[in-house]
Length: 283
Image (cartoon, rainbow, N blue to C red; front, top):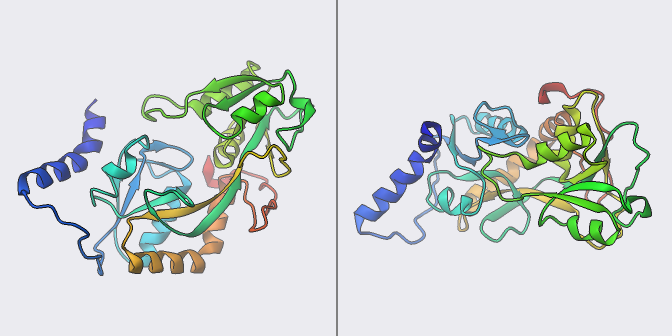
């Protein structure tokens, strides 16, 4: 409990100051000089981020802070409903390292990477589907996170779906890890998961599971997404700096993502690179 309270202290302080001032400031001027890179992040959300700095978004944030020449500071909050309202909008932090392009609650930067949902199966499995319309999925017991795009196509394909909750407090539950561990235990025959999660958790099993990016899907579901950084609206200079950083350091960012087994797509939606031969620093 103490750890959870500590994470929320910056948010509570900001709320208290706003309530006590009696003054509402609309659209304050954009910061021109930054004394620190203040990152909004979930402290228990691997492979993206955690308080120990073990996620790939932590690594990208470190690269970004070094480029700015300022300290890296995190504001931790569970990435559930209200995350943006309780972080970016309170101005206690200035950037989310990962935000889906088109997410209306933030201003999106240029693309950081593009990935796709993937099927995770045991290495010896005969299931090798690259589309959710594949007849091979019929009557197979497949895990999926509820309310995610693959759910309906899997049901239409006749799969026997086991669902896991989408919106959870990551300090308490890890549905994706549960889905992968069910594949390992034989409780399900596979799982369809967001690519970065699929690649990371599959590579950590012994033996590793096989990850099949669904790059040939014809179900009509949207399975691939462009991931940007998310900042507040009305901060054009900050957006320009981040876009320049992404362009200049793209190769280093790419290397970090490959290290964490993220299935990457090019701008045409084609698989960019094969998976590396080892998990590197993602262990």
